[in-house]
Image (cartoon, helix red, strand yellow):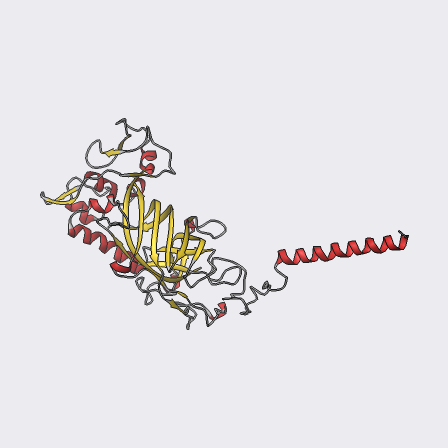
Length: 382
């Protein structure tokens, strides 16, 4: 081979290497062909569902300029029995008197309406926002609050389609992703998610408390499609015009329905430790013998309540489940809780009847099965 031929061949090899490297860089950086490189320019370009002028996620429009589907529970009913959806329900079954059941439900209704009870659901990794069929997605579960600038200005948490919410920072990671995530899928317009561990902001009559729920599973019919609202006043409800949401885009506007036949279901095990932090309202304290101003929901459920000397309100109930993610206390479950005096729970015995020295470990591991029905509507989480 002549020197000239060898040089030409070497030059061809180098040229091919340069071209291959350029193609690889383009593919990895998203600058090739069909990949949109204009996301974040504040203009709705082909292939984009929205463009809010940035490439950040978890602000209503994702880093790839796709609309982020989020829902907020706007109808929540504590169940006091079991059925095929949730076959165990120690928490609800403990409350046997109809007036007490009504009072518990009234507290939940009030919290949902005024926004103090806010449970947000974020669909992560969902490429189809119409809610038809999709596997391998994740459902993030967060606490949150309505955008403070609009609180009290016509706000109704039972009807808050496309209102703005801010997540509680203790429920999100530094990246902005929800800390609590459930494996999920959508099939035939029905969402299934779980099991997994979540935290739910709930009130059982007293102040709203973060309830740790293990083995949480939900099943929710996907609601009808609608076009996301656009804000007309720079505030709630709706997306800002600067977010450039595609006018033809439609996403599912709800999960479940506000009626028993179409409601979504949530089954899970509430930690005894969470119940031990939930103070009781004064009406319960004054009605149930032995309770004080420092009594908790756990004291009430373990000790029970007989009001006015003869009315059985709450049946004394022990934890019926265990959080497998928590270390076993003592020799393990089943755990038996009691009060050494009065009704304040301060003693835990393991399956052998031996007192567990670490009460906190026992309360974290011991759980009560529970059952809720719910519905939600689409909101904007920023």
